[in-house]
Image (cartoon, rainbow, N blue to C red; front, side):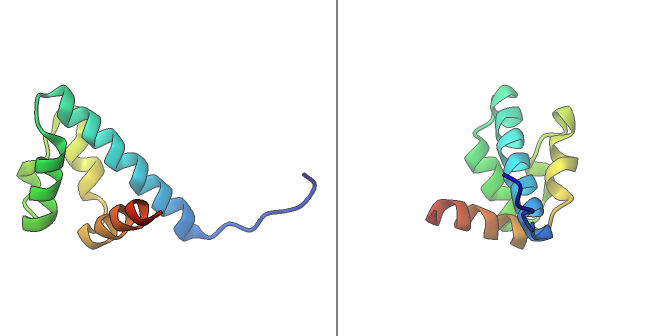
Length: 79
């Protein structure tokens, strides 16, 4: 592999968002919440109270735009 690969900045951001969603989901489960219900509640309402502050889950998820999170979720689903 001596070839140079060109990466798009958006590829990195998309992967980072996917990882954060998985991490937040695990944290919510750890706290006894249904991660699907909590994440959907946040995405629909914009109320960060749906996401626990445990292990900085809320801060990790809310640093991204909700529409971008939805885009990644749909993109991952359609793969």
